[in-house]
Length: 326
Ligand code: HPA
Ligand code: ZN
Image 1 (cartoon, rainbow, N blue to C red):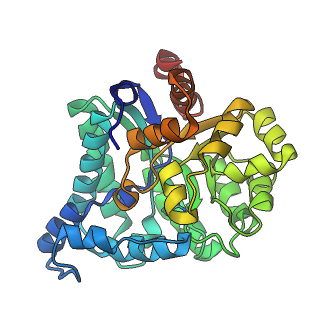
Image 2 (spheres, rainbow, N blue to C red; image 1 turned 45 degrees about the horizontal axis):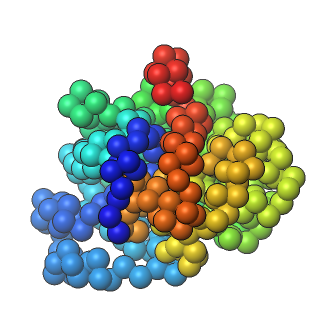
């Protein structure tokens, strides 16, 4: 579906974007060639045709498998530059970008390659494209808390390049409470905190509650199921916490974009935002997510402006740059 020029032109912040989820098949082939890897598909079209997800777990299998082409710092640089060019073309002015270091270090790729390549792209993009971006390091919740803690320690020399920490991957049996000590230490080190509470997961309401009340997160990723519990909605509003919603991702993973729930939260005064999550896999960048919201909710420009304003308001921007957008 075509994106309305108004949607494209709206200044936006993107706050829920996994950089590994921006790996388009064409770049995957280029990096495979650079690194001497043979892929199981012959063309980018074949790769796209193979994407069929019906759960978070079925998506994650493909997402992690594709990462084998990411090895050197240059690969991470090219990955991030490609995303930032696309973001600039959709008038994303600011992005907080997730990365999954354990998905790389566990395959033998040095932490320094990952963070070094990404950081260099962010510096170049700010100068060449006028897009400001920062990094959020996510822990894989299906790995142990000890593995997360050692990754946190490994990140400390790069603290100036990392704004906060998050929690992603397979949520089943991996509640926020499992990482209480890791997140307490991360806060002590000066990191801001966010966590995924994915759509329609087991115990999602308890996970949202733990993230807010026990961990004290500064934001919640997804978290849309809060709508079903008035006390969670009240708690989000009391704390002024943003939700980073991802309609097209929701559709792939759960069979619904949840646009009506997102609109209901917006009407209720919760600071919801729209984001793309893993755009190379789900087939839509942030502007396509705004368009999908507009098409399915029937809401007009006022709602879209509010969503874009929310994205700057619940971002972790500070000072004059923050004031500029509000
Ligand atoms: N949820 C959990 N883990 C993820 C996601 C997500 O939306 N995207 C990439 N890793
Ligand atoms: Zn996500």
